[in-house]
Image (cartoon, rainbow, N blue to C red):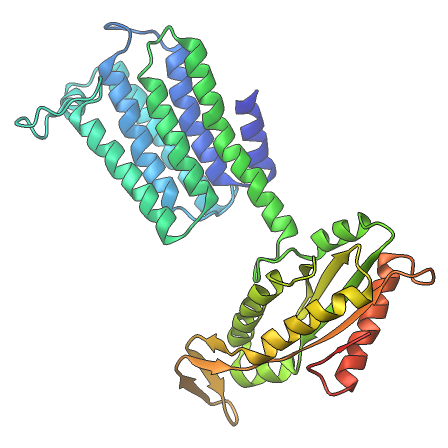
Length: 359
């Protein structure tokens, strides 16, 4: 059932990497449960071949970028895996002596390295694969890579169990298949509810939060002062940097508030169970924190006259924010109405000279 769910979810969300890893792990599972066992409880040549095949492909997958299933890149990757599967079956079925020699190749005879039935070449492939996956994860932190590391360790552990211990193997493979599946669900949630630029909850998360509010709450709308002029001067990359840095301040807003990115340079702060008198001080502290701190921009190209751009090193800039806030009342008895009041208050703050709060 988990296998079917993984396939369906991978196809539905067009996640080729989830599908690839499911296929690879399923092949090992299919062998342990379906293929005849020869030469004792495990056939060392077959299992070492599968371990090498798994290690090499997991290492490759860890560096793949998501390109979808039906794209040319996705189809080429599918074809590459299919070719390997056919080749591996042929090598095992024909008992190819050259391949058996490679699988059983003793790289360091003086060390006599041996772990269970794994040959030295299989162990080397496994270690290189784990190192490659870990390296790719450190280079670009990705929950899917973390899930792959966990799943691969569990698969290799499952291989070491006796062939007739199907219950233990089935349990381990359940966790193996759950790992990328849960990662897919988690990433889908993140993409749906978190803003990619700032990592703050986005508009959809805000709407759900507003629908769950009780009968007492306050809402604040804020944006960056003169943000268009800032973008025109320093460029959109610098503007993105400022929004990211600003969000670090917004995440730490006090008074029980929770921040959301409303859109563009606008943000919303929700204060459940709070009146305007209770949120004034936290909002003013937030405004002062932003105004009194400098933001370090990465190396940018500053626009000058005409189409010329002048390169500049890392530099500090100051920005300010304006905030409007309102609370639920008998007249404004829905979140939408309170948001509109907060938005009007925001424009009032801008009219007062910006870098201030208003209600």
